[in-house]
Length: 385
Image (cartoon, rainbow, N blue to C red; front, side, top):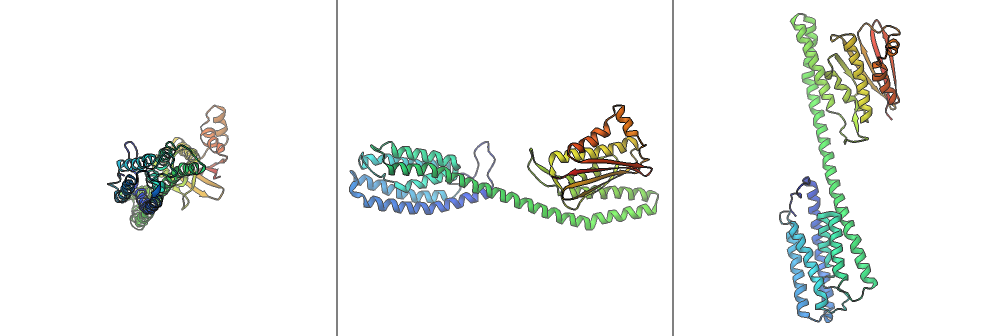
């Protein structure tokens, strides 16, 4: 078999090839055992041969091929598809020669259980499909030349037909598990490296930026502008670090994402100055829930930008519990006059009721708004179940 995958398919991981190597190593032991069994049985049945010299040549040829096959299958470069085809062809040829070497009323083929070598090789390489094809060809070569088919013949063929695909399926499962294990190990290693880098950045860069912000603000003048820029970079860097811990999951219906990481992105993704505080751990939720929740938070911030202005400040605080996550979105604007939301809804302006309340209520949660001269605060509660 070549280490390259067939055209049009993704290359198999090294771990899967390592599993295949070990399976072929185990198959080499099986080949030796069935070869010894084949030689012993044919020697015991030597009186059944009509052409004993030809039978001896076939048996010696099968022994020689066993040694060659063990050597060929040991190395990936030599383990080509052509070798597997030749392996099975030798089995079929030996079985086809049995009626002539023995007689039309033979009971057992010359190779006997020796056919397992090629059958298992096909199952390892081409999985259940290869095992099924090889089993079907071997079974047909065994049954077609027979004048009579007894219960023993049927039993042998039945075991071959179910054994080949089952072994192939197990080989494929082992290789898949090896690939999944490697992917899990790479993910864990990447997470450890992110944690190490985040710790180094926190202990160095973030602390320097925070100190620059405090001292620049205290100094005033141009230093205050420098402090403000340092504060913005500190928030951006904290958000970037936090987003690296987003839960990696497969795409598609039912896939989960980290809601806390998605909220962290709001710190740099919105024109309004936003400070985001989230739980220290990831909050995995359904992808649809995360999208709708983030959209509702964005709608709150859009209202701040529209009604308060680009110089406004906003704060997003997320608190996670076992059953739900509560997200508070607060600004420092002049607040909303009493009855203003109801009046807007009566005029057909459904931005708040649809973009915020509607989204959260469709998720089974609640959206409560409080406002005063100190500003406006939305409290969005989204169930995690």
